[in-house]
Image (spheres, rainbow, N blue to C red):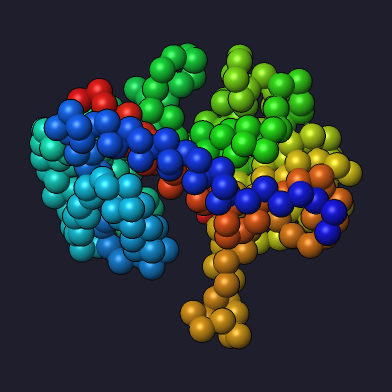
Length: 291
Ligand code: NDP
């Protein structure tokens, strides 16, 4: 492998150290930052993400509470829970773990969260403020990727960034942040998706290639330009009988082939995922500081 490994650990630890400092300041002023998480159903990946968020809060001296509802919970119960968290003065961040079980209207739930407590940065008010280049709680994975690139001295300015995947939580906000004027942005951005004709034609032009597809092996070496920076957002559970869990985690990028061509690449796990949690912690202290 010739590519530099863009590990999330040092970059996320730097952010978490800053967050810990803010937590100490807030506590000195009588505020203990608190993240409330709503988990509906028992999706194993969601349960493990929520446990990771609880651990991160505990490590930083922040409070967290997880509200568990059965997958059969009616929408009214979820909305009622969110409404209660919105008005609690001791709760600074509220997030509803996605995906929600089928039948529950995710949009309605996200829009029910008080935008000031929307630490996932998914509420239309925060999205709109982000699009307008104004101060906002930014979505954690996209803003974490911008921080990760910055940590390794990779400046998107003037580069061609190609984002594969246009979800509201990763691809679209990331394309926006990369094309913003100023720090962490100023890239020329192409946004690809499942209807993109000749995907490889676009990905091969990328100076910075970001894969947020949700399909292992979606990006292969022939789709990557020599020397490109490759960010793999994908977290996919691939069946693996040799692993005690019965699966292993794989990104969207065919790692060994792409690493031989790229100048830098993120690992999965240990890359973008760590940044996502760090940015969530940062958003929570920001929200607590404004409360
Ligand atoms: P979504 O399923 O919401 O979006 C996937 C996107 O990929 C869609 O825009 C889809 O296009 C596009 N796509 C699917 N197949 C192809 C293809 N063959 N060619 C080009 N584009 C394609 O996923 P998310 O954005 O929520 O997540 C993407 C991945 O990132 C997942 O593996 C997820 O687990 C992971 N993830 C990781 C996080 C982290 O912290 N590391 C955080 C969030 C997600 P279309 O719109 O046309 O359907």
